[in-house]
Image (cartoon, rainbow, N blue to C red; front, side, top):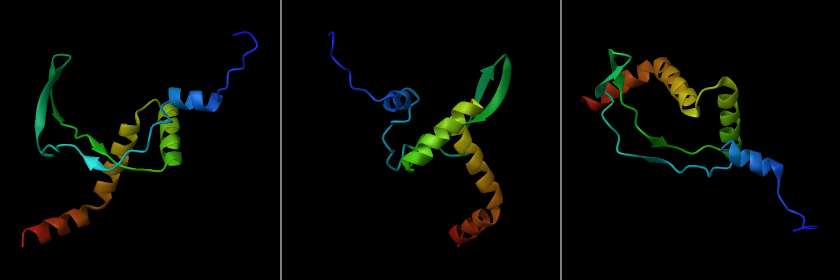
Length: 107
């Protein structure tokens, strides 16, 4: 092994360690549960109502994914938490669209 040069890229190694070399996800939804379904969980002796989470896959550009992971790392939260917060804000801001949807469906 003496004199043999190892060919590697530091950025590739760091990217894979930080999870930034994952393939872009393809859109799909996995067996969604009813959003109203709640489950009781016990933590620290307290009973708490918690909404079940539904695994969802979606696509984004590689650069968006890498930036999101970097922000999550610095903020010490998960990418999922960031996305959930953004979606909750979007839903709050678009209540009129949800009411319109209900009106259309109830024909």
